[in-house]
Amino acid sequence: MLAVSGGADSMAMLEVLVRLKQGGGLDAEFAVGHVNHRLRGADSEADCRFVQEQASARGLPFFSRSVDAAAYARQNRLSIETAARALRLRALAQMARDWKADAAAAAHQQDDLLETLLFRLLRGTGFRGLCGIRPSSVLEGVRFIRPMLAVSRRQILAYCRERNIVWREDATNADLRFARNRIRHILLPRLCRTAKGNLEADLLRLAESCRRLFEKIEPQVQAGFGTAVSVEPDGSLKLNPTALQDISPVVLGEIFRGCLEHLNAGLRDYTGRHYRQLVESIDRPGRRCFHLPDGIECRTSETAIILRRLPQAEEAGVRKPVILQPGQSVQFGPWRITAELLEAESRRQTVSKGPTCWTEYFDADRITGPVRIRMRKPGDRFVPLGMSQSKKVGKFLTLSKADSTLKKQAFIAEDSEKILWVVPIRISEEAKIGPQTTRILKISICI
Image (cartoon, rainbow, N blue to C red; front, top):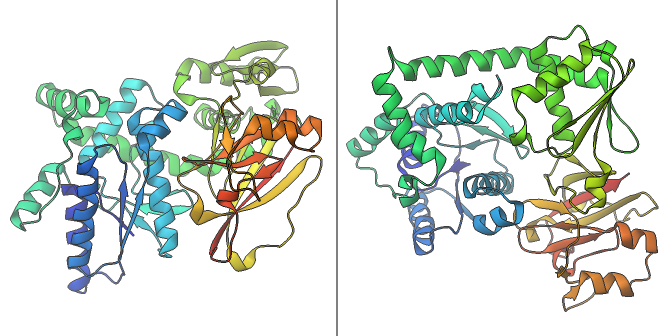
């Protein structure tokens, strides 16, 4: 699956790979995938038509998805760039699975890698951030490859002009309100002009060195997490200081980062100081308690380090929403939530229900964008299973014969357009499985 936006980078990638195949230098089948972020009105629609025409001209299958990046950014308090990236990855992964592709190819190039490094340096980052954009990684359960990382933007434009390759210009790429554009058009050129030596080459070597470092330490991180970290019944994490004492600070930082991700902490607010504070808690045993960003508390003793989300944050109704991806598990308060993508014929006919565990099944192709888990809020509406009209969630729960404790605990699973499940009471009519269902999303929830 080739991710083609219609810009010069992706059009050059499309042309190069098709030519390689035609010349016998590449044994592969291609399809073209395009994501319409609905950010530029008629221009976004024109981009989609353009990419479809280019795919047709080359005899390639074409897939497209439309997402509402602006609405998703508002709902999740994200920047437009971050929201668009999240939805784009999810949509491309879905298209790749629909076509049963072995991988998806994205046209990130050398300048993108340099801009990413500077962006992370300005924000503050560790060795992981300095890896930049990896040539290959698994995202949304699909392997993404980036065959253009060794090529600069200047070389790509020269190639397009030489081959008379047409492309679409995105006007937002010149909008200096976006941090990446300021880095691209102002900061990076200025640094390259004033720096001694070849700054671009130095940054690329830095990224490569950091990638090699992480290839070596990632197995250590996974092993350390597996032996030293356990999940308590209340959702907190218990770390064994003795098991962590002989681990290097770099690996320890990554283990703590994994713990914070597990607790759904917003990592943007974390700095090197916070990670040093966590690492030092291993070398300075004793009874202490300190607080970290996004409502995380760390309690230490001679025998354990406990990381948990503060209960008052939960009780105040500010439990942070989490994104649930197929093949992954997330923690939401005391609940562990897992999503699994199934073929229709593999579905078990029983729906699990109990006092602390529930499993429901949804038509995956009726789900738009990523699944989001959040608390209820006033004005929530959905179409309960078996009904034809939407109901207010609050009124539906009041009239429901479900256990009163479950009603109080109820929360929401939704996509970018609608509520899928008022957990654990009732799923939505709009996401139920039907005779035409080919793919099923199974969601399981346990305390």
